[in-house]
Image 1 (tube, rainbow, N blue to C red):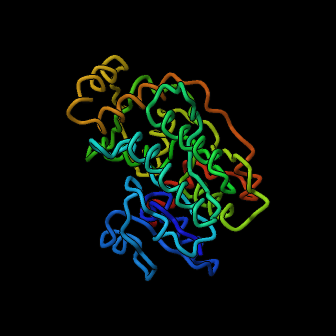
Image 2 (tube, one colour):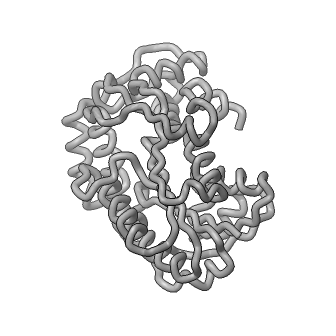
Length: 290
């Protein structure tokens, strides 16, 4: 049996679907079981569990593989990266090791002890917990999800069809499709040759401005995009941190992405997927059909 923690999220629900289509027995761990059943839309074993709380070994009973697709990037106070991605993953990994299960951890490209974002530092800590746990492991590191940022661009465009860009928008970013990330995670669940491997999933670099233009062309929108200057993003992050940490993280991440030059294409996704990573136009078409 494969247990997917965070199985109703952007990546998690696609992992669940992929595994079910392969005929695997799946159990989903989420905080809100009722909401998860509605989001997943099909009959699957859903259990209410909070990775921030200890004692997860009981709900992991019978698991051969445990997937961690949880994240606290958009979480409020007490549910941020340190709480979910670091401490929550430590609980989940410890419980998985206790029941003798392998672990497939969804992490981020850029995870590091001294990373510029809290999420990077928390994911790095989770990776270290996994290495020390003794559990067989596979780590899937992903670049920013294209679906997430297409959603933000669509939301900011509103009825005008003119998306708002954070910063200059000229820095190429190797966005990853959540569909590709989920496919690599699903493969890692059942392919034991991927144990002990760190797999990176990133697509062809595209700037935020180019992504907005591809979105506009696909939707038939016209007009010049708007920009929020980097200093404003940094100020918003600092001002929002005490009252709305999730909003602060979004602005801090946007400012970082507008200047970071570390996102480069990787062959790992293509090697595991057996095809090229999805492009922006592919993802937009897929989102339009959902």
